Image: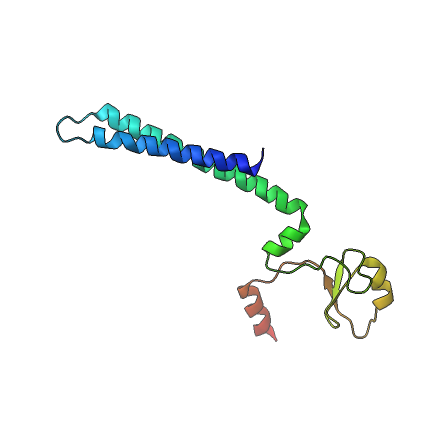
Length: 141
């Protein structure tokens, strides 16, 4: 199911919740209170809220699957800009980054670039360390 369909389901849940809220003024009327009308209104409202929650759940599952299948989007959401092509040949996708030269390299260009004395390599995409991890590593030095 598409993400767009879940948006419609959220809108339908909001509409059902609104209908449930319309029961409240008649149920809480000062002249003749009706407990069954109050219960029905709250049940309809909660059904709408449940519809909204289910729609958000399935929409996030669909979005999570989409992010997992597309690494460029995952890198963008993690706050890193992923380079689309290798900095050396500009043809293949980069797999590693040389931190000394600030270059992203594909597997073919890596064999030509390798220098064991100067270059330090990290994967092209990696999670950034959190604030606590950065502070802990800085304290050890």
